[in-house]
Image (cartoon, rainbow, N blue to C red):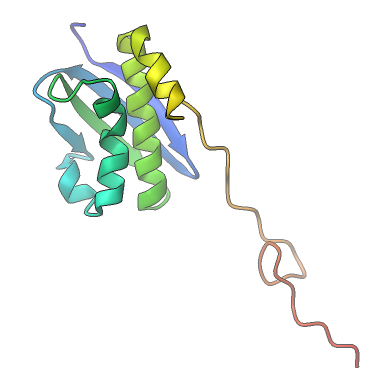
Length: 129
């Protein structure tokens, strides 16, 4: 593996382009350390989960460009991107990542607002008289 392996992860409206190369285990997201980009511990553990499951901690440097959506969607997109990149490094990783559901794209999206309603499903108050 000479050059970086890239993969794309998506969640809600977020898109993450992940570049994986041999290194010391640094994770850079949008040119910032991932501890600074994702201050919440839940997001950080979700991002490092595929690396920890495949015993790849400290083996690869991860560089990510992520855009769109909010922090949770972005963290999910980065997680999927890292998992896909690891599978393209070695097919042995596919089993444990699949077992923990890290290779499945979450299809849930925001439902659109309908006309004549307040939100997607909430309606205006009904008045009989």
